[in-house]
Structure formats: C-alpha cells, structure tokens
Picture 1 (cartoon, rainbow, N blue to C red):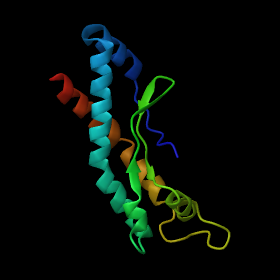
Picture 2: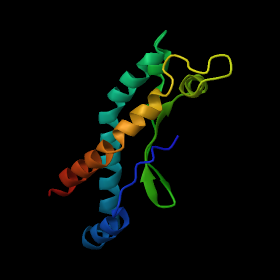
Picture 3: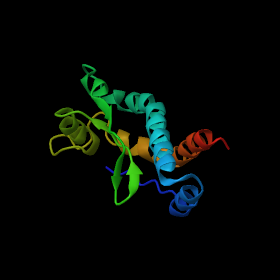
Length: 132
C-alpha cells in the first residue's frame, strides 16, 4: 500500500543541494533522514496495528525496509515480516466471511493521518543534517 504522500518541489530542491554540496553527501543525508523519521514513526505504527493484537505477533512482526530508490526517488516502507503480512491484509481489507473485522482500515487511517506530518518530519531531519 503506497502512502500517497507527495513532496512538492522535491526534485528541484535535491538538484540545488547536489550542485552546492555534491550528490554523495545529499544522498547520505536523505537516506539518514528517511531512516530516522521511520524510526520515529514505528512506535505509532505499532500502536495503530495493536488493534489486531491477540498474541502480539502482528506488532512484533513490524519491520522497516532499507532505503530503496525506485526511478531515483528514495523511499522506506513500513511493513510486516512474512507470513504475517497475509493476515494483516485480511484484517485491513476484510474478507467474505467477515467484511469488517477488528482493526478494519487501521493502516489506511494511520497513513491518512501521517500524510501531512511525514513530509514535515523529513524536512526537519534534513535541516538538522545540513545545519540550517
């Protein structure tokens, strides 16, 4: 599930920073900012999915991916280890026998709430990284 959060002016900002500081330093700073921001958000994510909690296995299965660059755009994903993600998918979207299970839509609501906050958190981390 993609978060849908979009950063406006990101490409231009990165290009200007790369010209001034060099691409390697910018790449390291962006990666570090993404990792640190995802670590800040992880406890809230675990709290959100705790509504699925029965044995605690879902909360314990939360993982943060490494920084990946799809078409040059860096990203990090919050998710679940296998096979837990299959069960979370059913809880999140429902299924024929139970179209509204406990925790229905929790991750979607979490993502929607985070949409305005996440870019600001990343921007703050980048400012810290570059000393502005």
